[in-house]
Image 1 (cartoon, helix red, strand yellow):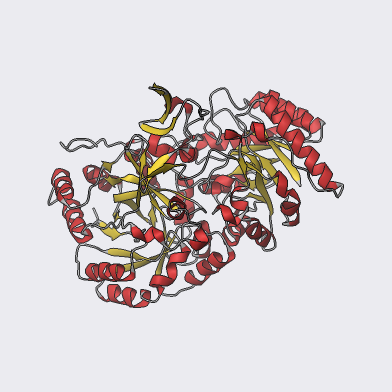
Image 2 (cartoon, rainbow over the protein chains, first blue to last red):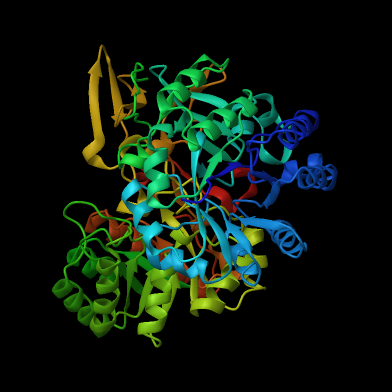
Length: 305
Length: 325
């Protein structure tokens, strides 16, 4: 079995520049993470805040031996955003992740990553992208283990990636729900999406935690946590494991998953450590088991949320 | 502009043809299309008869095969495409790249349309589907403003079709797993959103609670009309306030902007609602036929009286007006 790749996904939330710079500086000093994503996935309006720091951040991460991937927008809706995608996909010497078909089409003649926002549900679609220079394919959150296994069997050359930690992106819209919740419009949003580091909590009218809003994006309230199935995923042929950044100490989270991937700790120990961290998290793994995504099958001896 | 109308049953197809549809779209009775509801859709024989009837009246038929095949069972979708071509439908509406490739390779002469479920919302994406699979028309996702649609039409080599009336996704179509998060079944994988089998209504004191899977989607007072718990149209709590966080229970209606859509270069208008009965289809199609005929005669469309048919009795022009965003 090849060594599993541990990946820090793109920061989905509108963190301020200092927080983001500190975050990437920590990763540069961290040995457990192999690959790190930079770039804005959710809202083009946020891009000017960090674009000026990107060259330095990328240079520093590469110097530290990290594979750096530049992630691109998940929803490209106008000529300005289309132009951005054209510009980014022409950047040389950088691995780029396509999260919309626009970018995937433009990257077909160079090695690239197909992100989890691209709909890959079956062998034919997987093979199509693999034959067009995708070196790694990050599968959609919704896929059950049975589908993941089938795609692994189809695989010829591309690495297969699955997100194993963090809130799951469930939807994206032209409308900004962070702004709408505060009576604002997208064009005059005052960047209120930046006020919550892990997204705006959305509960049902019965006060059950349900979703988390991040600007145009709606995520699950529950954090996917697949530690109990990582062995199965590895055995099936998944070789890359994505952590999605949150406000807790992601270096500690990465260390736990690295130890699990190397089979130095077990899933129970990982879960116990996560639960002791200072962030209230409910976990789920339903999608992997073909159940509602909010459900948790692997309770690992803990009380199910 | 071509008027593209829904039919979930042969009776609805007849109603749409009688009411003045240019095209009727429908799906097979299985998970290959995005309205995989009990009691709905067409057998092979029913589609054959439907196409014969429609063609006799110079009406075209499109087959929606617009879900994403699950790994291991792609052959079900392949059979749907092969049979639709053999029956002689006028276009096949597809979203999945594997299926587009299959259809292009096996049936080089078939007319392929890109489903809204593919979420092709920009010039580069549309050019990709045209270049790779020779799609002739793109059904645009409901995330674009009128200005953006007009700009797109000046830049792309394919026709565009837009949603004109009916239920409205507030999320980009084909990129939404909200339904499967709550129920395990999604539009992409199962052809359903917020499926009825997972819906429950509970009486609580003087209120009605609507639930989807384990989650409360809305709570209605006695004097409120109880609606179907479509997840994104529910009432939720955020920032210490309760309300329709994503969207009110409204429907899309573009009657008032038909001349603008024509001017923006839109080739076809799509009416949503294969799950609707034939009386509804009749009324909506007739009203749009009349509006389009008036526009063709150089008269502006008057506001039609479709409001009573709308979900929650109110309507919106959605993302077509930028203020919605």
